[in-house]
Image 1 (spheres, each protein chain N blue to C red):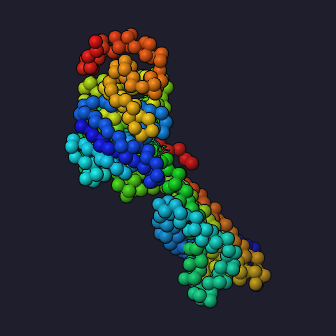
Image 2: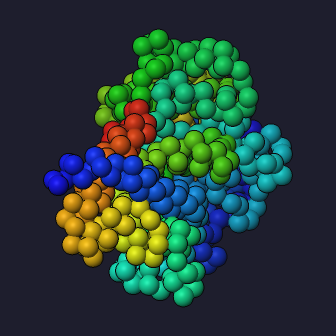
Length: 212
Length: 263
Ligand SMILES: Nc1ncnc2c1ncn2[C@@H]1O[C@H](COP(=O)(O)OP(=O)(O)OP(=O)(O)O)[C@@H](O)[C@H]1O
Ligand SMILES: [Mg+2]
């Protein structure tokens, strides 16, 4: 049986696992955005905390993913929730960091002008700082998503499901078709997400501002 | 009228950057604050719209302390132009000018009409520039938009911090003329910071020469040229200018319609 015959035969299974893969990646990145963007904004306001917060987020990023999945088992067990949680920790740093850098790089003269015209802090954030740093923030989301599509395969080891299932099962059964049926869609997902989010990044660059 | 009363500013609680300063700026008057770098010009200006807090003394606008006012509302009623222009790069010229009107809740049609009028006022073809982005404008054009934005809600008080110092001499000259023309028409109360003595002499009704947060001399340009109170002023004005004084005064007196009368 060649690879294409295998894919056609297993297409329902592959599709289900691909959707599952997208789900755990998407959920973890969404959570990281929900937490990471506000945290990133906050640490631009309290500069002294920036080093500490980025340092902590950096630790999660530095730990080997396999070790982090191993560490989480005694605490949260196995399955969907601990997998998404670990992936969430991974996604956090690029998002916090890019939010921080994006907002921090807005020209102080522009903010000063806004303040001088009588804008409130909220108006400055909403109409100046966020629109101007949106492409940079999206860049962080893109990095997180691409990393997590890869890392999510490892989450299969603690029962997350997803395309990692095929890869690890294929390895233990010495079934090359099965390995490729997991690996190739994973690679395509990563490339596709990178392209799509890169396109969004450019779309979100405000007119009048050249791309960074 | 703006009154600075025994005004003190200290950033670090040790040295006074502004040190017990008294200055009265009459309504409709264009006063230039001039002084060497670090003499406290920007600090004073930014205290008037409360971007900087007041350490001691008080600032009164039309007799009322600005410290009793809400800083956000205060700023919406004061035009503010800075050297770096500070136009929002992601908003069109029109949107930039309409910012404060929008903050004040003006409706769209009124806003647009006002923006068009302000563009015309600073000599930019309104239709052509309304939808452009600041990045597509020259430095001089950007600063014209900056002035238009400051005028948008017709504030009585306008603060300008070295608005023209980043421009080339010819453009600077044009904008100085523009300010004089606008001022002849609108009679705003303007506080204008510069460290260019030529600019000060050209546009000011009165000049306040600052040194280390204190006023060395506060007088009309003529008076400053004719009777510098001390060596520091004499040096700052420049001996060559003093020497040229008679000619200078002659030209000014012919050109100005409402300036002070000279002998
Ligand atoms: N935010 C700040 N924190 C601490 N010190 C400041 C701050 N802003 C200004 N200073 C200090 O206050 C003094 C006056 O500064 P200011 O900016 O008012 O001077 P200036 O006359 O506008 O100078 P320039 O012509 O260079 O713009 C300087 O010694 C400056 O270092
Ligand atoms: Mg200054």
